Amino acid sequence: MKLQVARIGKPHGIRGEVTVQVFTDDPETRFAPGEVLQTEPASAGPLTVRSARWNKAILVIGFAEVPDRNRAEELRGTQLFAEALETEEDEEGWYEHDLVGLKALVDGVQVGTVSELVTGAAQDLLVIERPGGADLLVPFVEEIVPEIDPDGGFVTLTPPPGLLGLGDAEPEA
Image (cartoon, rainbow, N blue to C red):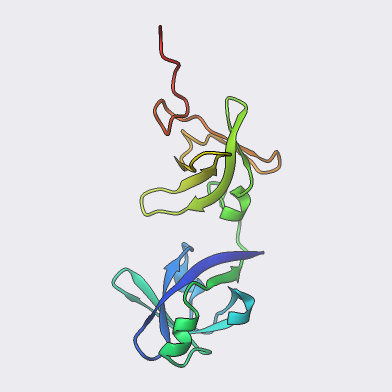
């Protein structure tokens, strides 16, 4: 199974290095020299990691197939994929592909569909696409998303009062 591990940003320097937005919790393994990454669009790759280093909080990667800044610029926005590691599945963790497409239910009523998992430094967010309305950003914590049932095709939300208008009590007369 392929997992998105990064997205290429802007070129860095003149030797073909690029900055990447990291989507993995194990960048040292995923971007070790010699690792081969698949790309989307497929015509941009595959790409073989030549070098990887941190420049402050930004990962800078050089690829064997990218000799100069011009080729690096062509890769801007390319998504990088790697095979899922053959390790025991973390029971507390979820991959984005496990969640996207699941119905979002509040008290058994569908309020939207999970369209994205946004990973953040402090916590992750589920993006819930609502029919005819603005997307909802829901903190992906057990208190608010207590049940995830990929086989059943849904996540259950228990939003606190005031969270994006969901879970609000009816005004008293």
